[in-house]
Every structure is written in C-alpha cells, then in structure tokens.
Amino acid sequence: MRAYDILNSTNDRNLLPLCHSTQNAQITIDINSDGTIPSIGFAEKVEKEDAVTIIPVTEDSSSRGAGINPHPLADKLIYIAGDYPKYADVKKSDNSDYYNAYIENLKKWCESGYALQEVKAVYTYLSKGTIIADLIDAGIFTLNEKGKLSDEKIANYDPAECFVRFSVDGKKLWKDESLYQAYIAYACGDCATSDICYASGEHGGITYKHPSKIRNTGDKVKLFSTNDVSGFSYRGRFADKTQATAISFDYSQKLHNALKCLIKKQGYIVDGLCILVWENNLEEIQKPFEGCSFDDDEDGYIPESNTGEINKTLTIASITGTKNKYKSDSKTLLIMFDSATTGRLSMTEYAEVATSDYLSNLEKWHRDTSWICYGKRRSFSVYEIAACAYGNEEGSVLKPGKKTKKDVYQRLIPYIVCGGRIPQDIVNQLFIRACRYNAFDNKSNNWQRVVNCACGMIRKRIIETKGECTMSLEKECCDRDYLYGRLLAVADYAEGSTYDDNENRPTNAKRLIEAFSNHPCETWKVLCLSLRPYLNRMNIGKRSYFERMINQITAMFPLDSYNDNSPLSSEFLHAYSCQMNDFFTKKTDDNKEEE
Image (tube, rainbow, N blue to C red; front, side, top):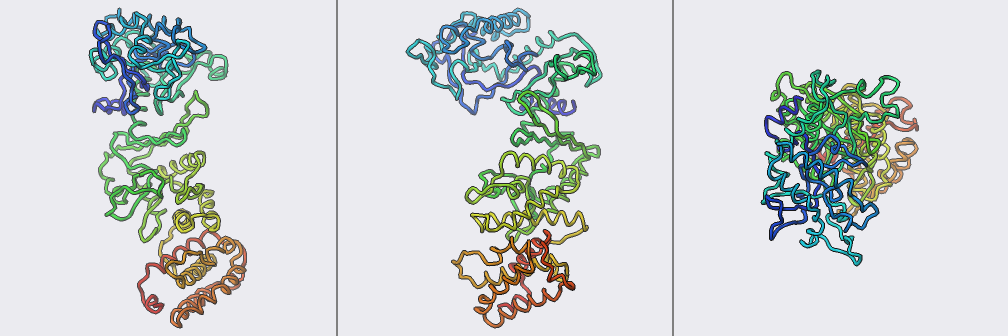
C-alpha cells in the first residue's frame, strides 16, 4: 500500500478513485438537471484522444464477463436504452434483463442518500426509455431501410455496441470529484461481510471479485480469481474459496488502482508482457531496457536504428550521478505480468533489490556491453539486442517479431536488474548472424549494426569468464582466434582501401566471413590469393605496410595453431572489430607510414 499512499498524497492524476475504472466511450450525452433534453448540444461523438472515461463500477461490473452486471452510471446501450429492442438490428435485441438490472441499480443509488442531483437527472432521463430515438433525432445514429440502426460505425464500434457517458448542464460527470466521493461512500457502505484480509491482516469487507483492465482499458484478464468452483483452483487443498484467499474490498481497490497507475506512468508492454520497474518511494529511476551513451554532450534522445520509435537513451553520467539521490532504505522493484489466456494474468517475475545495487548493476551492464559504434562508445537497448539477434530486415531497419522480442525482454530484464550471467544462446545467435554477411540485403547498415551489438555482448561474456576485456586492439594477444580475427580485418581494410569513393561492393573478406569463421586456415589461403591483385595496385609503402602487418600477425600464432582449421570462437569477431576500429581511428607513426 506504500505506492498507493504516495500516489494518493500527491494527487496523482493517473491514480483512479476507489470503486472506479476506465472505459473507452463513443458517445457523450448532455442533459438538463431535471432530466430533460436541451434544445441544442444534446449528444456528440467522442474523439479518440478523449475516449478514456473514468466510470463508477460495482464489484460485479468491474470484472464482468458474459453475465448481466451493469455499471452504476455510464454503460453500453444494451444496458441503458429502454428502446433498444425497437432499433437494434442484432440477434440479441431483447435487452429487458439488461435494462431492468441497470435501472434498478441506478434507482437504488438515487434512493440511498449518496446520490447527487446529476445522478438523479440521469435516472429520470433514462427511465423514459427514449435514448436511441433521441440519438437518431440528434443525427448521431441513422436508420436502414428496415427502420433499424444502420451499420455505420462510430469509432469502429457498431451503433448497438456504443458506450455512453453523461454530462449534466455541461458538467462532465466522468471528471467530477464530488461524484467520485459520493459513489465511493455509497459503494463502501454496501460492502460484504467483514473478515480478516489475508493481505493486510486487518478486518474489512471481503471481496472475491477483483478488477480487470490492469494493463490497459481493454484488458479483460485478472490477477486474482477464485470463481472456478468445479475445477482445481483450490480443491484438494481447501474446502472452499474463503479458505483459499480473502482480500478486503478496500485493499483490492487500492492495490489494483496503484498498479494501474504505475503501469500507465512507467510500464512497458511487449506483446502482452508488462514490465514494471519502480523505486519504492516513487522517485524517478532509470529504466533497464534503454541504451546508454558515454558522451556527456548527448542530449539523451536519439532515433533507435531508424525504427520509427524515439527511445530514450541514458548517459552513463545520469546513472552514476544519481546514486546519492535515494534514501538509504530505497529499493527498486521489478514485476513482470503476462497472460497465457484471456482471463488470467500471471506474475511471471518479481525482484526486489536495493536501489544502490540496482544502479550498480545497471552501470556495470552498460559499461560491460558497450562498444565503439561509428567512433562513439555506447551500449545497446534491449530492443536493439532483440532486433540484431532475431530481427527481419525491412528496408534499412531490423525489426524483431513479437514473440522473439517478448522472449528477449523476458530473459534479459531480470538479468540487468539483479545482475547475473548473460544468456549464452543470445550471444551465440548474435555471433552467428554477424558471420552471415551475405544474408543481409542492406549490408552497409544492418550488418554493421549486428556486428557492433554482437561485439558488445561478446565483450560482456568475456568479462564474465576472464574478468576483463578492452575495446582497444590487443597487439600482444597470441590467441589463435584473436589473431585470425585481426588477419580478416587486415584483408578487409586493405582491399577496401583500394576502392574508389563511389565503389560500394563488398570485399572478399566480408563475402567469405562465414566460411572463414568455420574453416579459417583454408579460407585464409583463398583470401591471400584474392588479396594479391589489390596489394599490387598500391604504392610500395602502402603495400609494404600491409604485408608487414600480415607477416607480424602470422608470426604470433602459437605452434601449429595457425594450421588448425577448426571453427573460430566469437572472440575472432571481437578481434576483427577491434582491428577495424584501430584502422579507422589510429593516428600513429604506422598510419603515417601507410600514407
């Protein structure tokens, strides 16, 4: 309840009142305080950006399914229209059970002493049973040749399925604080039998019907459900649902409303997987799925791989500079929700770590996975990792499928938040894909993105196994895989340096990189032969520079390892990229000799 209390004390606009939910409305009706229709401005269609409407709900209606459970005030036409059978051109045109249940509940509220005049005005108007006829007269609905409602949709809804909200004398009831409080007083005064709440340990009115719409306004899944009396929800362990769980109405409302508010403010949803990370005092905290720049002059917002989405990118200073901002007891919490069916929402991940540890884990993740990309050091967002490992090419961008994207998020986020070892299969997939240069249509951009991302993740794995791994070229390293990676880079750069500025064809080194990774010794002999004509085009100084470098690297191979034709490990790609970066950035005497 800590989150709810903080949100409530700050009057957070995203926090729903108790006993209220949200619904997308399609029609707004304005009536007079005596329940009559005004001469002008009776009804209007709701614009999409203004559709989300706060509505009072009952225990039953907040989680309603196929049964008849009307909302207390705003609702669909099938509940509020007394003339529905006359105009609805649907199989279920007899709505008498729906309408009678709605009117009876609204009447009960009006007679309770908790109803405002505006509520009584709505009751007076709807009791007349002319709402659809009035909407036809107002031009909101049209009739077909049968005298029934036409198929003309309103905000993609059939007329008979439209949700209607009300205003009285211009006062928007879905924004009226006094109406919220009046309904809360009415609903809480009608609570069920008091018992011990398993969540709070206090006595309160117990409910077994909990709200839905947790991830968004169209969400039908629920976190708590004990209505399966014939299945195996609790049978075999408990005699009935009262023994399985008992949560007070007040606690359930506050829990769900706080959760909805946090998800709306800072949740991230990937194909139904809801990821929520927050600090327990609700202080702003860096998100674990963003990329990170190591340049302090970055403005913090960059387009991510031209995906069409603008994703926030952290700076490393924004992580290190906020560690002292939080209280000593500050904790960072991670929750993930997912639903296998349309009725149940499961908490698939929960973690709670000290905020200082979380920020240290986040900083370590970004430092260890960073790589030099086009001259600048940066790390990669979880989206980029998913796109580079599993994405399909769509023009100049890589886009992961929903299922694979969701899987990567579900596996990487807990690792980033809590620390741990990076999943090896993701690193392997990035390495394999980086070696398949010929599989890319947009080779100059997409392939290089994959190589950069792969090198960042390979570097992370090397750090986890060996303790350290630099981004600069290790000229004294005598590892076979590392040396073969350097040789490939020399062949690539040497051939490419002979191309004209407008020549955009791939080098032989790039074309043969997959074969090279699997059979390095054999493929290197082929590359040496194909490189000779390009070396012969160079001036003596430049040719000598590359020949001397190849000889120096070859001489560093341990005994017999040069002739080892077995597949290379991912460290060869790391070495290749380091050598290429060294070629492009170096300003040493060797560079002068090359010129």
